[in-house]
Amino acid sequence: MSRAVVSSYGMRTFARKWPVSGAGQLRRTYAESVTMQSASSAAEPGNRRILLVEDEQTIADVVRDYLLQAGFQVDVAGDGFSALNLAATRQPDLVILDRMLPGLDGVEVCRRLRQSMSVPVIMVTALGTEDDRILGLEMGADDYVTKPFSPRELVLRVKSVLRRSVKEFSPEPPVELAGFELDPASRTVTHRGAPLTLTVREFDLLAFMLRRPNQVFSREELIKAVWGWDFGDLSTVTVHVRRLREKIEVNPTKPELLKTVWGVGYRFDAKGDGRGGH
Ligand code: CA
Image 1 (cartoon, rainbow, N blue to C red):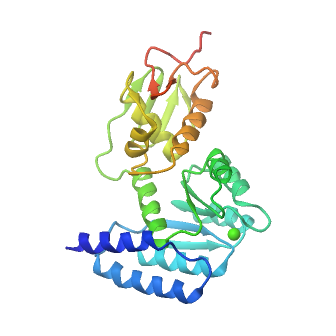
Image 2: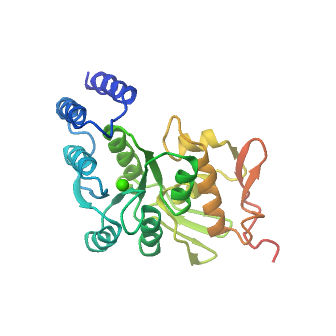
Image 3: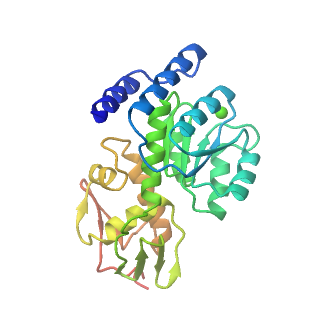
């Protein structure tokens, strides 16, 4: 019964995207959500800490309220430097990062976060141009949402990313293949004994491919299996494959492990050992 309520509400929300301007409409959408949230039970466990980086106060307030309502703990930063300080002191489980920020912009914040921590990042881009999205992903974002967006959709994305970064119950067994030792329980992976620093989605993508060597997967299949999306921008997969290659291949432009099968998709070649002919 609650499922019907949730899905019918979801369709309404998706059909009517969140207006960035027009505070009256914002409040009405929010009030609807509070009602529906209480009707749809407690959803997932929610003691995760989210760092919300957003300089527009109205948007920050609404998104924070949605996250609190979903059971998350929330810290809010209004600019890039505060975001980095809060990330260091509060150790969030996930960062929602606006692309356009005063001072240090979101892409630079993401790049600096990536130097010190592997926290998942959802980038919020203003115009939703493809360049913006790709740039965010290149800088290490795990996912992105374009404005105007529905706060409910954002909360779903947050839960989806967290589900993949926190495997609390019966983690999958470790994998050893082609010089990789990957352990889902500790979210660690080494290649030829050297630890790799991977983002949440890079780790999931590598784990998926290592478990299925020598099989070809299309980008559509990967976005469903690894990202858990029924639909989505396939360039997300392309960018993650490129980033992963930069971390695992001797020569990322001539991959020996994660190969492109032209016109079909990607295949992890278990015969390659990552030495790239050396
Ligand atoms: Ca902004």
